[in-house]
Image 1 (cartoon, rainbow, N blue to C red):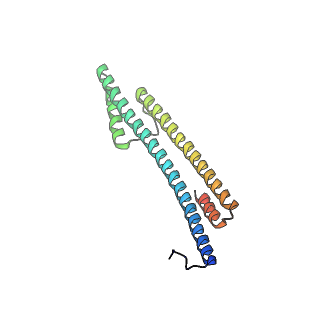
Image 2: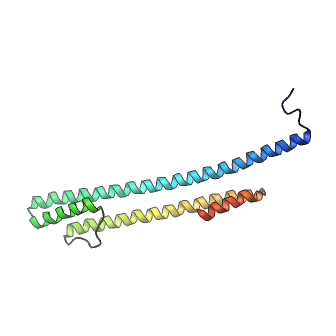
Image 3: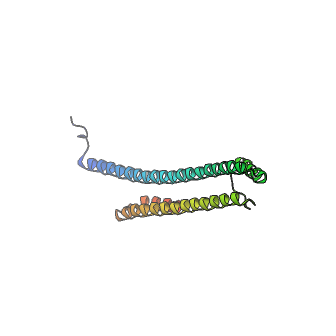
Length: 166
């Protein structure tokens, strides 16, 4: 006895339609889930890369201060050595540039360079996040258009909700 032979041709047809519907629905959900995961992974990678750049910037600033301290000690400059040591100590606890740059020109130059580079990293991150969001929305719009063309308005509505929340 063959499997399904007990079904009438109408029942077989209905069963096939249900299976196709389930397959198409799961494909839609899978496609949307895959797109969400890829987008999240891209954003996470961007954030991690930016964080790594900013961490290196902090290390570079600390190294620059240490090198400056060595130089001013070699020069025998007590006041400069004291100022650089104070900046090193402040940096180790705060890990951020103060609103007002140091009165010592050498430290102020480092602080200005740090601030300029940190701002560049922040702007780069913002620009890339916007680009990722735009690409994600384009992919969602394309998926949504295909669903509408195939008269799958419920799934298209889910895509619209994702677009509104993204």
